[in-house]
Length: 325
Image (cartoon, rainbow, N blue to C red; front, side):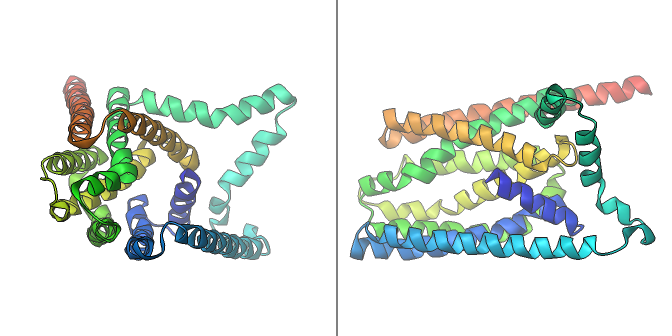
């Protein structure tokens, strides 16, 4: 996932597009997710879980073919660029800074110790950039994202068990995903515009947290044998996933040095993965309505921490500007 996110950001940069347009690319993932779940619900009801082995094999083959075609197209593109005499093209060298810098850095490594220092540089620079400027805000953002993914892990992996407890069928579970994806389409498409209006990924992540808290609290109040009431709040999942992913990409673009997009996404992916691990551990100990109320509290704490970090950082910036005047 972080590698794919890094490739997407690199592709947007090569196409001279804003990194905030990541949501428009991620939209296609929501399309396939929705189609698959609409199919799987009735399919499992009819043929059982054995159908998953067949569809997983088909998906694996399609993924390999897709990766091969993408890699081949890029190989042909860069091969055609190498055949051109770049020295006679104005500003052509601007397309090759990373390759030249890499060659210079690697050629200047006299021994294994220098090579190891070079390999460690991306990690150290990403972490240093995270804490160097607006450190409190950045750390509070990472904590809020961690808390949100603690909650999202349960919703994405265990929510169907809760729906079954309420009396839902597999077809009904597939329908909830279809409703979710229907609202993800416009949210991912217009996410760049929303981000520009909010002017900060902080507020976008706050909106994702609020949508999540409202959703799981409503889950915990749905009466037994009325599972279809969940459809009322399913659109909020589109808000949560669409805004959270777009905000994380924009956040990484702000503090990760240019050329380290994959490293930045890898760091955020590590935070999300840790949050998902903790969330599933909590889901293993708690169950039913109390689980979703506890998750609402955890995500609310992360949201409050982010609000505090943003407020303090904003006030410090204002005082600094006034002092310089």
